[in-house]
Length: 262
Image (tube, rainbow, N blue to C red):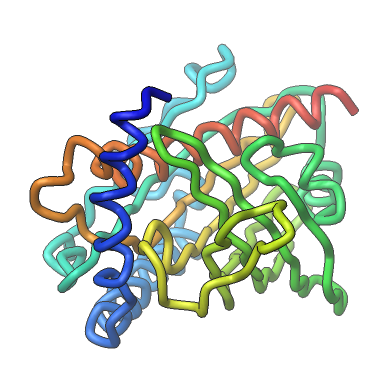
């Protein structure tokens, strides 16, 4: 990277870091949005359109190998506007041929090997606790796009099988810490809610439908980040606004690839 750009990044990011701690009003607004989103997911999963919900079905596209990503458009979209933060809500769909529901769930529940399945986005992974279909896992995320962000996170996940063809899962971050100087002797975690605010929370809602010789997989990913600061949109904006969508697409692609290799 050119020295002048390095210097510019240092000058603009250093003073900004202290100003992007998570505020309680931001967290409260996100929790309210999450509650509304969960009610919508609950209604869809218990209704006649378990997998697609209110989205026009695209089974043929998925069976042709496409990964479909859509920005969520909700009746309560006004709730997505939170003070001093941004909510990112994307829905992703993929079809994994020549597999079954049990194999897909087993793959996702294998948290000790997520660092292999989902590298380089997942740099480290470890199952911390399991009680039947309840999992607590540690994941270190690493993402580079102009700037490099490393996050240590813990996730609380539950998996539910409705019948022989349908299942769903929900995962919520219980801890997110930005990592300073990763993989160096002076590496340290910043306190939760403090730092540059590239991700404060992430909640994912998965649905699985075995049909047509494989499994349809849907993931609704909702995350909370800081807002894009005035004047820094050219630098930070692409990272904050594009990474959630790109990460969801990469996750679904890696899930399909990992299962195809099994």
